Length: 312
Image (tube, rainbow, N blue to C red; front, side, top):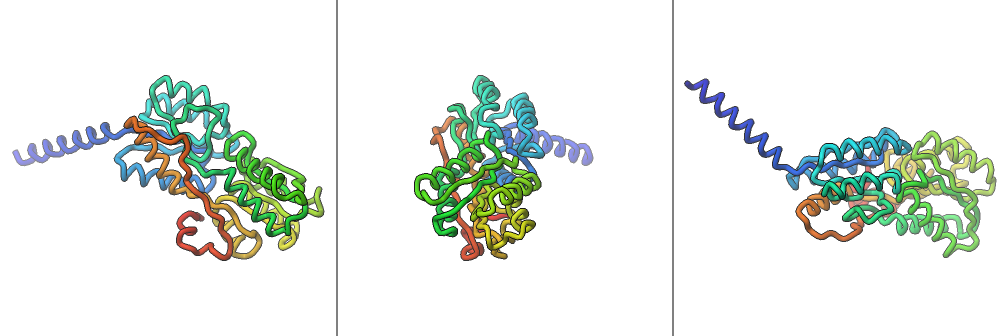
């Protein structure tokens, strides 16, 4: 009798767990990639929000930020599971639109994070104001090179909103405010540090009077750092990065890199899930939620406010 009672209680407990799990809204999150620590930081924020808000999430992304087709496959698979909401950081701001249209037809609210899309389908996008942030990076570059000289950019891509906005934010600020600074080259390395290293070497060889390079994401910036070291240009070429990661942090501390823009990846992940939960409930959301950014360099890298936005 006692054994029967124990088994019965365990059965009831398991059923209770199953019901609780079934009642939790499921949110599918698809990022641009998994190879950078940035995305792991976003994921940690999303997981914290899921725990706090009582929802279930999956967080996945392709192995490389060049794998647009793989991300589309993940998007299709996510829609097949009929999530309560979909969060997407689009690699290609146009290629994902047909699938987002399908999500809308299915009644699934779409939340953009990190990178928006060329459509009004997302109920909101949680992201850094990349145009503003890259413009600030341009101001710092101008300050460091004395407002005159040749500069170049190594950008992760020209298809995502982050790639486009960071490029344009930097370029347009230079054009608008600094007539004596000339942008001599813009290259796209797919966020891959090895490819970005090779591209940066080619830029340096082609432009011997180059005074500065802006690396527009973690992989791009690491590539720039590596090339400047390998070409013996440390102290001769100003390097400004974007995002964080161990190599950028070490480069700033050593003086190889002047500074970088850091986003708020943990906050971004948290806010994306928070927005998804509100969308599921039918609450009205602003079209853009700014997750914030900071400039960090040797002088403030240990500031607690900055430190919580950095990752290794």
